[in-house]
Image (cartoon, rainbow, N blue to C red; front, side, top):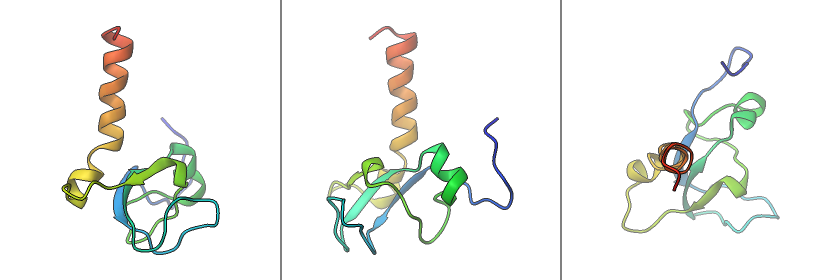
Amino acid sequence: LYPLSLPVILGCDLSGVVVKAGPKTEFSPGDHIFGRQSLDRIRELNGTYAEYCAIDGKEAALKPEDTSFEEAAAVPWSGLTALAALTKAGGI
């Protein structure tokens, strides 16, 4: 198991609207994004099961316009899991 100190907010996947962006990111306030929170960031800053969360811009992308926030939030970790299965177990 991954060591976490309580109390902690869990959650890895996210989608939402950028409220504030740092100077070294491609995102601006109002952008619709989706992404994931790394396990190290969950330990340091908490996860994504919250109204607001701080993430590394490298872990996010602009949400496609024809995708709902719910659909976009379902992609990051499940997509990485599928990719790992295909590359490691499937040899693709």
